[in-house]
Image (cartoon, rainbow, N blue to C red; front, side, top):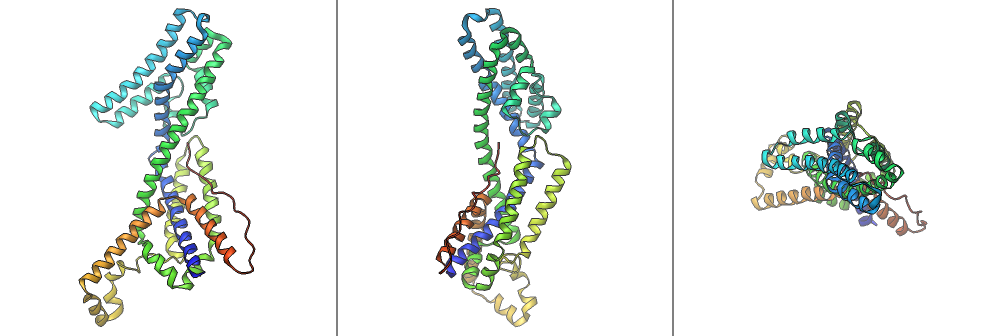
Length: 357
């Protein structure tokens, strides 16, 4: 049981750290407007890679119902838009100027009458239904409705299905990018707060009081995570993020980082290597001299173990709060079954995924 309790305490520690990482990553997304950039990239990929093929296929299906002149005009509108967007990538390669490329991309997307420049700067999500409606109101959509009448509905439906496909592709790309960002943030947090996995594990194995104190807060940690996950899910479904919402998110994130030192985790500056800075001042000259006379090999070993512990923290916390939420529940259920006279607990609710389109 002590080892199982130590494992549960460690999982809870990683769970709380990764929850803070999740907050920081969400804050970075808002600050750097990563969702807005993703939406613009999706729209460009959609117009360039999906619009023309769908129209060509649908025109072939309609066959004789379309006059050659109408086909050429509609295809010309789609081709012109695609060529404009493709040319932006060429310019970016030549100039290396992302700001110029992004500005022109926004202008051309606005020229389609799908979105205004203001919307493109703030929108983070567009549903399939909304895209179809905007397509119908665009120059190209208006021409399709004028030329095809009711037959245009099938084309808009096909375009909507392709938007879903593009969305799934970009969702996976965004998740991969988010995982990398989370790992980098986790490394920074581990260094800044001295979160050493090796030291944490050793402490929980050897000190019953510390691990018991952490386990006693399990319900609080889980409840706070579920509240945060629900809040981030609502934010993800919003079309725009206001400055007030960003400031509120910043305040919550800062508070969460500050609270890590106060929850009883064996982390912080009172442990190696930071403790070496004031070891002589607190313990007196005799003990300070003993500390200074440690063998070089012993000191090098301690540093190596510390570096390993911090690296492990970054990798483990980078797995994400949902992963550690499931790990905590799994170890908790196992520990309850292992206790004599305790019934197996009911299955807990599956973890909430807040990575999104």
